[in-house]
Amino acid sequence: MDTTRRQTLALMGATAATALAAPAIAQGRAIKVGALRFTSHAPTFIAMERGYFAEAGLEVEPVFFQAAQPMAVAIAAGDVDYAMTSITGGLISLAQKGAVKVFGGALSEEQGIPGQSILASGAAMETGVTSPAGLDGRRWGMTTAGSSFHYMGAKVAEAEGIGLEFVPLQKVPAVIGALRTGQVDAWAIVPHIASGLVASGEVHEIGRIADYLPGYQVTTMFGSTANVADRELTQAWLDAMSRAIADYNATMIDQASGEAGVQDMVSLLAPYVYPDRTVEEAAGPIVAGTMRINEGAALNVDSVRDQLEWFQSEGLVDASIAFEDLVDTSYVETVGA
Image 1 (cartoon, rainbow, N blue to C red):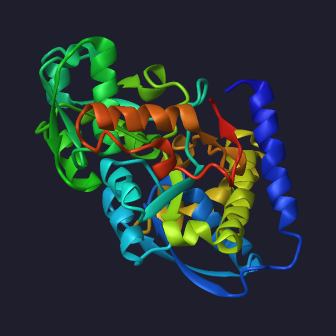
Image 2 (cartoon, rainbow, N blue to C red; image 1 turned 60 degrees about the vertical axis):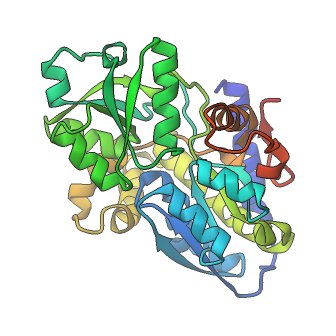
């Protein structure tokens, strides 16, 4: 992302934050928000802890998941109101049925900021895998067919001109276990998880997703179609999240508050991301996991279109699904055509 674009998105984030100086408009609405215990979900945790949801008139209860696809199902079923996670085949199919809608962007790959790592097992390294080009015929871990892990692996394989065997393991912890034990040869994951695996010595980094998918819109904001149609409610949630995004980027990317600010942010996030660790134990992976989250929840529509087209080309979703079935672009700034 170039400097001008970053400045524009930063201004959008500041504008959204200023808007919340007005009285809360959602009037104490209780909502449930889907989340993963990932650093990339920091805005949800920041908005809870710093009172941004409360100031927007929202009473938020987090609901934790271990993969993206079940989150989309929970949104469609009405068990969760909003969520922030990757685009999956399941989410796209639910959007076609009119159950869910994407309305904003979140985590993005950006050149110059370490992003998602491509990892190889120790066993794969011992047999000569030192870069993604060496993965021809190897086993690539993923949660489910049609997950973001599936999409990333396919894009790496396409770029390298290789074939991969995709292995569905349902949950992120299961993929981690399979990679550590050599049951799968490779995987790609956000840096706060990747850094810990590499530090263990059992797993090795062999590449970066940003080199294959520059500008990749890793995660998006979405909700039930009914909630997204409720402009007052969705705008209240989005405004609170935008304030939290601005805090996160200023503290962790731009280092505006120095080391003290980083440590305060780590202390806030640690109980959510690593509830079984002390703050000191969680600090390293959380800092290593820093990636930019789009200011103002701007959405890279080029990336979303590419993802939709890939799912369609693989027969994972219906070929008739239109971009407009999946995305409502009326809430945030869009990047790309």
